[in-house]
Amino acid sequence: MEDTVGAKANSEVMSSPSPLVSILMPAYNAEKFISEAINSILSQDYSHWELLILNDASTDSTQVIIDGFEDNRIQVYHHSENQGYLTSCNELLDKSKGDFITFLDADDMCPITCIGNCLNEFEKNSKLDFLTTGYSRIQKSGELLSTHLANISFKRYSEDARYNPTVCCATIFLKRELLLKVGGYRPFFKEIGGEDYYWLWELSRTGKGLHLTQSLYDYRFHTEQTSATHQDDLGLFLPEILEQLRTEFSKSVWEQSKADLIKEVVQELYVQSQFQLYLRKGQRSINRADSLFWENVFCCFTQIRKPKELGSFLYLIYSWGVKNLRNVAP
Picture 1 (cartoon, rainbow, N blue to C red):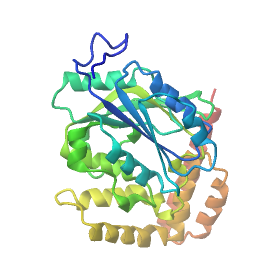
Picture 2 (picture 1 turned 45 degrees about the horizontal axis):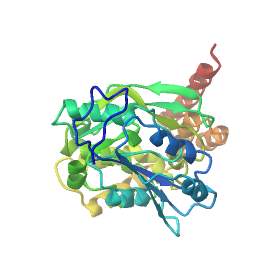
Picture 3 (picture 1 turned 90 degrees about the horizontal axis):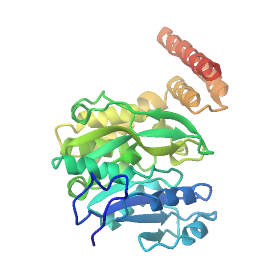
């Protein structure tokens, strides 16, 4: 099937036949936003795509809304029991048929030029295997909160376990050939999250990556999003887990037993330390404007046993003050 890029991208994008792009959308209780998400794909100025939606046993009207869209490029799948985000993504990766694969969470949106602009980069550089893009954070209502256009080096990301730039991993846009080499998300992360960051590291080790300093994704920030609902306290210490995993497997293949040992060590050092646990909960509360901040602060204070811990506690209070001063500044 041949296709052309829309008017804005038509003069610069891919030669025919046009590549098929698979967009993967896991959905769970997404009735408030999924219509906007789907419409943002239908509005793309590049039309040779397939949208794979997996309704992960939603209990709201998500399924009814999905069924209201009639387009043969949209494929819908269902779970009778909730399997979670990681499992849903892996299932969609297996079902995808595109030459390129990307993602759109059911509560997010992407600009009209997103697919076309990403494909342009692969047309310009035949050695490119994957890319990510800048993104905008939007409120629940859709109003812009901030735009993030940082420069990111995937060569450094593949080599330096301490290099942890903030990436919106839903913007990952990769060739099928790279997916076949790397595979999908690792089930190790199912209960704690962070599967996409480790996957991005595996992509960067295996293929050539590029970060576009263009905002081509609208990330909706709200308290019901999947990244905010992991209950396992171990997930609070993902940076520590990811750094240890990247260090351990930088020169070797994945071994589940070694990964499990790393998880146990982090559990003992951080989660079982009440001070470290409430300190991290307090830090998260600042970033999410969580109403539990002062409750976490009090619990953290009662666990102080060392001068170094007092310093960390005071810095937590300082960070809260800086964040709130920024929010009230004219």
